[in-house]
Amino acid sequence: MSSSIRWCAIPFLLAPGALSAQMSPEPSPLVLYPSAMIATADEPPATAPAKPAPRGPIEWKVGETKLKLGGYIKVDAIYDFDEIGSTDSFDVRTIPTGDGNEPGNNARLHARQTRLNLDVRSPTDEGEIRGFVEGDFFGDGNAFRLRHAYGEYQKILGGQTWTTFMDVDGMPETLDFESPVAFPQVRQSMIRYTHPFEKEGCYAAVAIEEPDSDVIAPAVAGDVEEPYPDLTGRVRWKLDRGHVQLGLFAGMARFDPDAGSPDDVPLYGANVSTRLTTWGKDYAIVQVTYGEGVGRYRGGVTAAPDADGDLEAIEIVGVLGSYQHHWCDEYRSNIGYSWAEGDLPAGAPPATSTEMVDYFFLNLIWQFTERAWTGIEYLHGTRETADSLSGRANRIQLSVRFDF
Image (cartoon, rainbow, N blue to C red; front, side, top):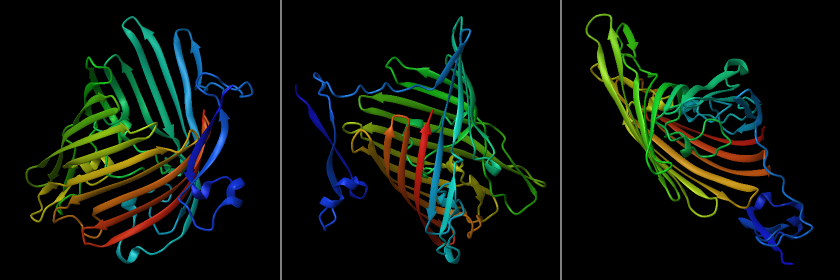
């Protein structure tokens, strides 16, 4: 009877203690060690215990309606080496600049990312109707807040969920809740229509979505308005090793002064993204985002006054690259970098308007059972304001997550 040995490579500092006595004085980036005897494809050892089948979510049935309760519990231990305004997530837009960017150590533990969701599916004469609701505890004072609440029937979706403009499958895996900047990531209310193509996994979608622009108003009396909903869309091409997606949006921001005519500025943006498998379970993600006013899809300012006091959309370009490597079945790492820069109008407040940000992350995750993992992550970010002052922040985060 034949057997094989599985080898796993993980970063040196996290090698098991049993090997520590064998470590050489010279540091090495990787260490190889045998894990456990596993079965070959056609002749498993008689002594190998059967691996339990992965458990699904909590499910029950009421009549013909199926209900599924899911979610997870996650605790984060965070240590900041530098001052940052967002202690629960690594939001680089809150990094102080200039004299305010002083070293400021801070420790924080929280479980606010814990989330619960309910998936309900019922049959009809024309097909299945689905409802999905999810929330987490990132509301004020750890209050439960709404993340998703939508219904689906055939090709129609209505409710609140990820914007059609973004690539949901193009989000890198980070322990940090905020995740890298420079790609669209927002949940908002919408009505969406999806048209599948003949090839499985290829489709086009179009939606009208909630307009939610953050506009710096000119220095005259008046109101910022959202005259029309955003129009968003995406086209997805399925490839043998992944996918490519094009996302588009168009909208409008308006400032209506108390005296004079309204000042309208068109908004638009494009996002090109891909996620491709390289070898084994490894994959790479690349995204490029460009547009005038596209910053609103990541909490940025949409428009500001120019030197003449007229409203002007802020031109933004952003790039993201990340890679996930599986050291073995239990261990995986993610590394990534993102950068975004805006061309700010002359009327934007120079000391508070963010002109450039970047975000770097590196993590190691141990999937110690099929429904729980723990990990460690290093985060680094910088921010530069319109007055050319900059600041930086560094963070270490430890997380444990239990899925159910």
